[in-house]
Image 1 (cartoon, rainbow, N blue to C red):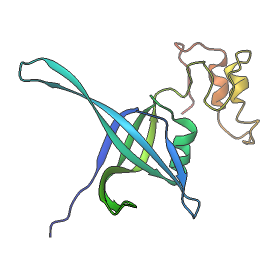
Image 2 (cartoon, helix red, strand yellow; image 1 turned 120 degrees about the horizontal axis):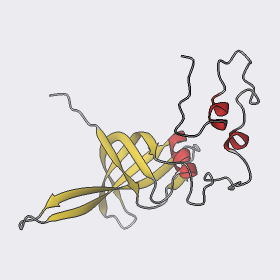
Image 3 (cartoon, helix red, strand yellow; image 1 turned 180 degrees about the vertical axis):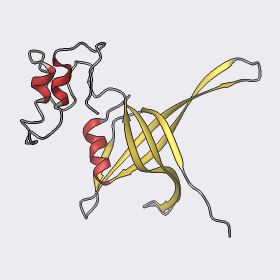
Length: 166
């Protein structure tokens, strides 16, 4: 028998907030639905936009990170494999489920909420970025560390170039 290949790569937005449950062995399982837009032409040649809602299952630490950092509308890039499984309902009916089992979920886009703060933290408009992030040296890095990148943009604007020593 020929060896198969099962690889799925999806890029889209979450259709709803992640649903996380835990197994009896305390492993996190997140169910997310990724909405993927596609454009096609109908018989008359008119362009139509359609949306596919693809169920994705995420396990372990990645599942907990999905719960912590993602919400409806978040952009994600999912790499994984397609899985088809079946189960029997309590009434004895056989059900089939097709889903993507994620091997890696990348968060695409900004970490900021609409109100300007980071998700899970309160927005603090009175502090500078450096004060919010803190210095790497303050977090326990040695003075041998070649450069504290949190200090780089404190005096320069975003359009100014910075010489990085490597």
